[in-house]
Length: 490
Figure 1 (cartoon, helix red, strand yellow):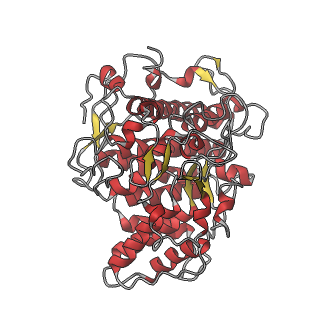
Figure 2 (cartoon, one colour; figure 1 turned 30 degrees about the vertical axis):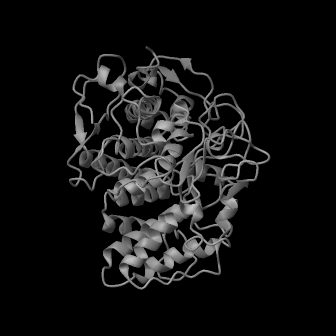
Figure 3 (cartoon, helix red, strand yellow; figure 1 turned 90 degrees about the vertical axis):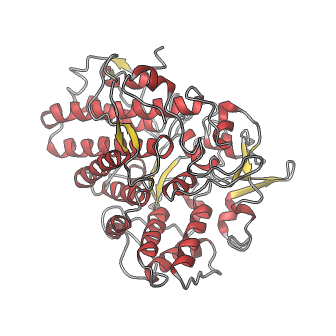
């Protein structure tokens, strides 16, 4: 029962502190129970609560593994190799086995658990932060908490609610919890609309942009702790999901240098830029391309547990067998040798296993205990978000700045190719193809299909799933349904 209701029990009764290791900025130790009255009484305790927000967001059931995996395997570019329901075979087949299935229950629980942590932290830091850590750190910490809360709500919308494009956000969304639940019996809350949830997400990210620091103290912290540009980058993703293309353009232009000539860089805050070699992004985790990633370490509790790790799902190479739950679909994007030529360096981030005659994503090559940093958002996504928004708002022709941004991403990995779209439709199609290539194995395919209200293509033995079909979005968690008397299922 404790496991079932953990996402509505306040972690505010837990003080999370740090340990001495490479990931000391984020890593908790086994918690020490303290009164929520004193959880924010010292700078160390306040910082401990902030670290706990990141630690729970990067849990294996959420951004440390499963959320990213589900975003890929719902699309058409992966084939299931095991049929194991524990590792998402029902997610891949677009047929989650009811409201009690592992994927449906555990993702909902971990995300709402983290939301409650954010709400508890926001309340505590607002009350005690000014007198304990001063105005500047109080603002920074509140910005971090609200950014993480926004990320959690956005993530939930991608699976449990209709896309914004279906009725302009008028369909049932999620229970919008913005105050902490500190005990059982307080979980009754009706669903807000999709538009209301998105409005809260944007409000949180706007607050974060204003209150987060321009930069953090080190390159590692600029990747693993939020700063101003993190909030701006995430807003480009959110606005894209709302089909608010002027919003994407407004936000992206804050962190993408003007004009149509690369290199495109962020001219204030953290100096984000594409790395010359994309492989560097997945081997040196704290480059300026990685706007936000979650760190992993050897410390107990600071890496994904069994059957959650990205490499466990995606990899079967000579040095790291993983479990190879999902191979690349040979008739998916990997098979498009015209749109994705062999000379493209991103093909080097896949591995062909001669023993099985199958190809696998190899962006996460480290063996057990799987310490690769799960990516949240990269600068290449901001560039392609901006390119798409420009393309969709310029109906007269292929938008020249959008085309230049697209080519900057493509030519980074294949200098021999220059995309020369001449119409709006051609440019949009080229951008959508580029997204499938660039973010393969990073969990964005589901988001792209959903935000455009597109049919999820067929793959292997799984038929296509139209937006009107059952299973296009997930059912609501059975645990939520049992605890929240005002909740209605999808």
